[in-house]
Image 1: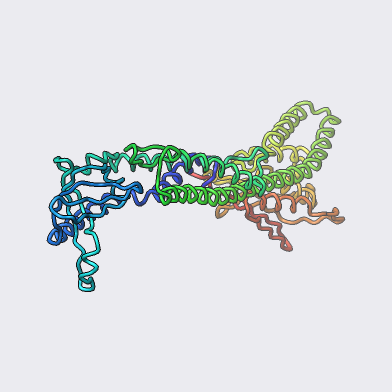
Image 2: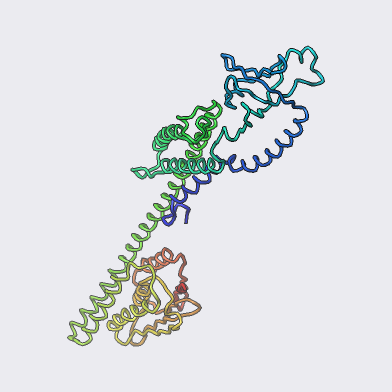
Length: 450
């Protein structure tokens, strides 16, 4: 059974792939706690090491028109340069009185002239307007766990939607290149819409908002776009593989259907070739009884003939029958021949009861019995004995050969039909032993499944 069999759930498979794709896309979020923990320890150690070179300064912030600022010291004419990015990121305002930590310009390759001309670098803000500066209070961004849940859920849902769109069964039932191209275009359009509503953390305001409402750095937009493109590419590749697998499965099912139809048709043709021979013999025997006015035997003959026809009609289409059922039919068939040949035809039946439930193709005995009667001389002085017995998991039908003075022409259709039917239904071959004195056919029985 393939993974796309009728008992499989494609929606469940798509959901599993969507979750896996979301995990891959948001792998950085899964590593964030570990990185944050290690980064926090490292940053604290680095900060403690840097504090030996930092000095505290206090002054007033003056912001120019281009948003660059200088913190002018109270005790000197020196100042600390604050970039526009720092001003915006720390939410500083013109006129703020700040106590800051600065890192003086120093180093082996720095000249005294460079130190005199350069401004100290702003490293951290300690107090603002007399109050301790709390960076976490300024940026009350959503927790990382909350952000991660949003990211995982969103990209899992979007991936699932893409997979459903890309793998939706075509109306015609056939997966064509044109169908794949149209699905690509539709999914790309859907991906564009999903990009606009992708959740991102925005610092102004400090909450998770859609992309179209956020004011992000261009690199942040690029990251979201890469995530969406990655989803789209994976969904396209997955849908192509899915379509190929479905096509292969459909071809397998179609081949099996055609094979079954072929076997059924051929089987019906083979059974149909057997029926005329059986019918003609039956009608000849029945007409003989009618001419003799033997009403009792005629009625019994009609009953056995009716049973034989009923068995042929009801079970002729079945592939396998139990040996017990086949022998019941064979006994009725044998009775019809015994009526025709009176006391000149004998059947020795020795069936081990343990084989009653073993199976064989239906209507296997009729052609063997008919051939034995057809190709042998049957007289009072030279009666025909046919043995039907079980040996080594096989049903054996044998008779001593009594060739006719004028042999009837044989086309071999009956035996060939039996051999063909047996091979088609069971995949096994019958064994035919045609010696100078005996004709033996061995039919391998199939053990019933537990």
